Length: 120
Image 1 (cartoon, rainbow, N blue to C red):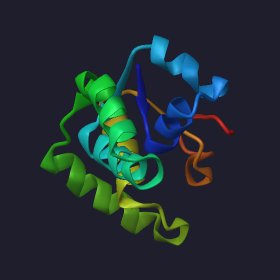
Image 2: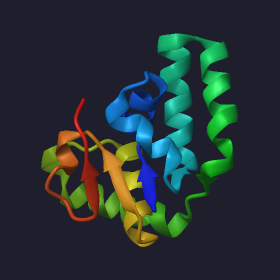
Image 3: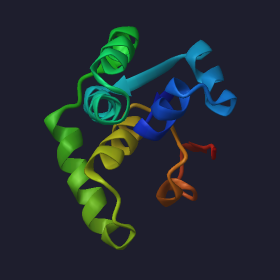
Image 4: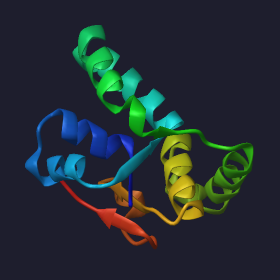
């Protein structure tokens, strides 16, 4: 199963064919990733577009536990030279802890395990 990050969601919403195939696959989105995606959409595309995508994707959302959040901060600390965002780190650790494949195009994750790296 795939776990989509905000990068992947933005590309799906913009219709990028390199990413749209993911909608037909089994996938999950951490609730924190979905919140970040909502912010990006409100900022860049407006409230209506943000609401559309949240309604479409909310059934695929999964809650992130405190344990995963703590592991996220440990991961960020260990990788602080890469300056990985909190939200991206949550998605990655959430994926690892649940044996999912993390889907992203963020260069910081290119060489990490259990990542499907797709670029625009």
